[in-house]
Length: 147
Image (cartoon, rainbow, N blue to C red; front, side, top):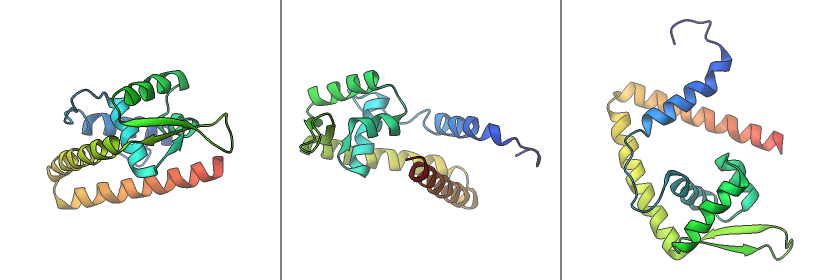
C-alpha cells in the first residue's frame, strides 16, 4: 500500500489482480478449462451442491454453469440428480473419477501456489496466508448474513 488513504473500493480490484497474477502460469489440466477445474475443486471441498449453490460460488450465469456441468458429466467427473425432497432442485456430485481428478488437481495446485509464495520469502508468505484466512472468514460471515 502506498499510503494510508487507500480506498476501500479498490479491495475487489486488488483481490482480482492477486488471483489473476498468482494463477497466471498455473499448470493446465488436459481437457479441463478453468471453470471446470474450479467446479471440481468446489465439489471436492464443499461436497455435493445444488446447482444454485455452484452458480453462487462460481459467480457465473446459470446457463454457463449448465454447460460446464454438462461437459463434466460427459467426461464422467460429476453426475446430476434431482433432490428427492424438492424435484425442482438439481444436485451435482463428484463421481469416483471426479474425486480422483479433484485430488490430482489439488496436489498440482498446492505445489504451484507454494512455489509462487516461496518467492516472497517466509514473512510475506505467512502474511499472505493470514490475509487469505481473514478474507475467507469475512466471506463466510457475509454469506451467512446475506442468506
